[in-house]
Image (cartoon, rainbow, N blue to C red; front, side, top):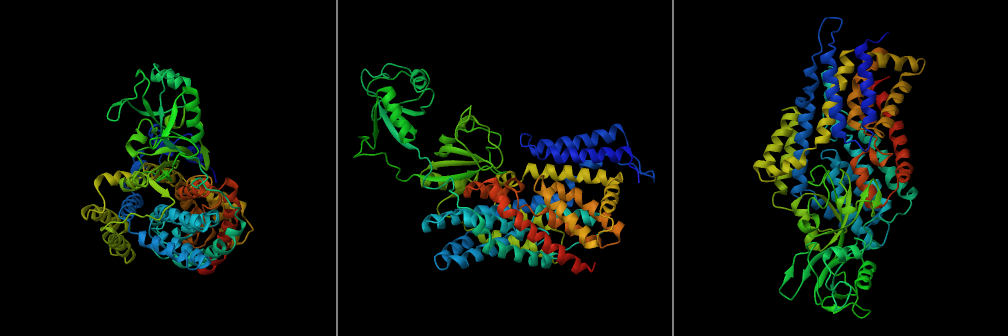
Length: 605
């Protein structure tokens, strides 16, 4: 079987896209749009007609924007955000927190089961965000390392997400692409095999994973760096007396950050660069104790806290100062912006201690923390009063992880739960398609005041939307040009002589490896038509091979960058890359082998 030039180009673009999707420095949105534009332009310049004389219209590559699966994904993202904003899941969190005081061992199992169950119907990111601070709080109170439970909890949500059509966006895409090819899979059609394999995975996460994970110190522990607020009193004839603010900052090599200048009890001066300091001025500064003492020595000033000179009898106090982690998620206004641009410290009344990026703490950068553009998935380690942290929670601009169990809840929570239940029920019983029920549910969230219209833009992910559209476009190009048939033929040729079960298992393992390297949505959309072609060439049930793609694309266990929640857990628990490999690879093998046995038995091959 030979390939036409258009099919070769489609395969080349697919490989190029998968490589681009792994490039950290290139936003996924940019990579997706580049692929989409190249597809449309290339098929415009060099039109394609199949053997029957039917042309592939370039405009069709943009049809993904109106694809039923994408509409459903967007509707579910909005509805899921309504669940988070109203605090609808908070009673679950409080119940789990209480259970820990009764039986820690049993509470771990129940936490894993509840995490998985909730993830079958709600996006797992808010579930992880809900449970992380609770697990952190329990760990701090019991003086145990949270690393033994945080990763198992995060991985349990991934196991639960693969049990229903709406569990993940990946599931919806696979099912929709399969439906376009004539194979319809219902919401709960694969619940039984997923639940069986997931149960084995839960047992592993409960009994084995905590024992093979090393103890790690999370960034949000009490041993982290602390920032204190104090005053530097300018003495007569000291270095700072008569100098401008610019000269003082230069003297400290640009390290000192002056929040304000107090002249008298009622007079303040703005900390402008040319402001001239004089004896008696008090500079409001925030920094670590060591740095504050250095400023005192360098400037010849006197350090005061609470109106008294700092000494052994009057040390710096961290009263009402708490650490928290703010996750830069898809709804955050901080994506691609700097702390300075957003006036972060003034708006939120929080001090940023460090930035965590893919598990690494960035404390010292050439341009400084405040001038570093933030990326999706970054975590800010901040310090501030409890009131400031609670205000950030209420605004909903970040996913907030702190070491308390103070969970926001509103009177709209029951409405949000009812709306989500109706979305699921209407689709599950076949009354309306999931895309219709999800969008109707999103509208209901707004009409019942569970969400405001400004919340909608935070709920929707440009990254998800564009990568889905680009992947659907690639899938169309591969299918219509015959590239999927060619790949399927080559796969069958390579696996010639192997049993049907081994071929099925090999396809699923290939998808599992791919999903830990590139986007799981891209892997799923591109892999589904290929899997159908393989099944048809072998004369096996296509539905079984569609599930091989679906389950394989959900096995995002082995690397922290495979899924957003893995990064959240990595930052909160202080894990390393190899910790995920140590716990995630065995889980991948367990789930892969389980499905390799269960699915062939279900479909009799």
